[in-house]
Image 1: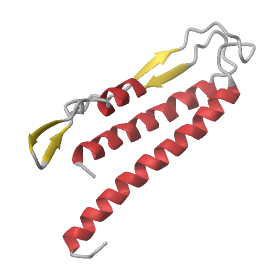
Image 2: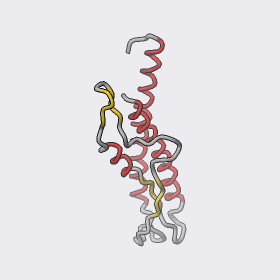
Image 3: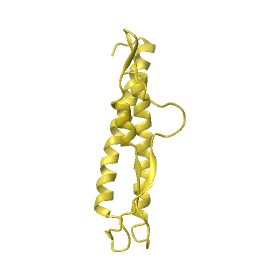
Image 4: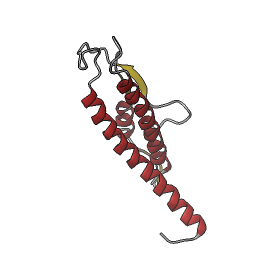
Length: 131
């Protein structure tokens, strides 16, 4: 697994953590009058990175030009201005929020497992243990 893939997985795990906070906030405010549900957008960035054209700097190396680095998150929080009164008080639909929470949990578990496996492999190489 390449370093750019690990960076993408780390960004994805950060997105999942932030999305968990936003979904929890939506659920906590299900009875708050005129509250507007929020969501976290990351998929556009993921699609841009995954569809980025690969360029070779050496026949043995590939660099993905779309991977961002630094501390700026690759996601943003957006407000859903849909006027659907799903809860009778605001536009938070508890069934959708719970389904999103379950999906988000699986995504975070996937990303964290892959990252953990990567670092365990590196550790075993450093220690001279065959995998």
